[in-house]
Image 1: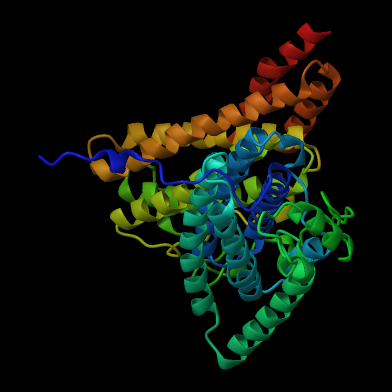
Image 2: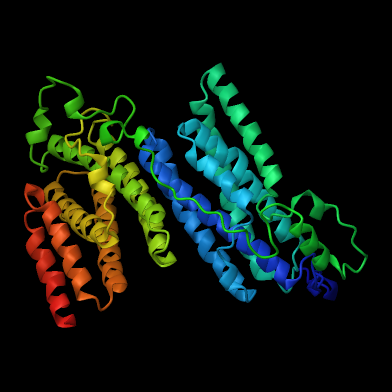
Length: 464
């Protein structure tokens, strides 16, 4: 076997890069802000996306975006600049993101994200990884390469969705005009690193001794930008009521609600026990709708409560991905049972704001992540027991995955409720009482009021 010579063991990297520590940290802070912004765009858009395939992709990407934010925070800590991790590049860049958020057409949203914002962020992150100190800043390079790999995969997926949606000449022309406008605004904003044109063309000395001073001076000439932060423009990602007709989540054909098809008879499988193929198929078909709603519920948690800890957002992003996986698992089980999505109408035409519009985060956690997930876990465990002996191993493995994930989601709701409320028994009492008020009268949740009282109100009494 050939042996390596001494020259093969030499580290070919050179100490030193294009950025000092302060400038490297500023740029990494900008990247983290942009990654979090994309996470919030995905989370806030999910509920009004007509197409389940797009919602499923959003679920996965919410999680990868959360991973990017976490890893960039770690890299910033290594740069001793963790406190700058939520620094916006510039007011103009924030306004560009707001424009993209306000687009209501699914096509224009995808164009803004996958043909303008993500390609620009990918390019900026790769540029930084190429020019930063390969020895002293190697942790940043590692994180940025991870982000870049995900972005490249997401761009392939996003552009495929755009091609599907831009089916007419008119829609393609609209998408191109929107892309052109956004790209012009992006250029004027200075981009995610907020340097702007003057900073790119500064005359550097060979030693780059005065480069940082020149960059600072150039940035002061650019509107809405400073050395370390934007002037502070922010916007709220409020949902668009016009995208939810009558407050009900829309779906494309052939998916439909029973209430929207007057006179349609109740399908016999709706009354069949889950111990039969037809009964289980109907139950899983109804569950598929719940998985959709939960992807959206987790996404809205991320956007509706921006001041809550990042750890909670990370867990919501993880659950969004798992719920998107559940949509796939459910669809496969339905197919294995001889059916297809859309074969039954959805029974529950629940007003959407009643599902995700709760203003109290603790009620959202208790209702959505303890009660709803607990009920889903009980149902999947029951279906596992009732399908033993006749269901295929693939069907049963799918049910096992559903049940295992739901236990994790219950823990999210329980742990974050107690962690955030801390030693405030009045707030815990209020959240439990309101959750009970909302679920009382629902025959499928009749055991939960007593469970909530037993689990949380005794704890509240111990706090006093």
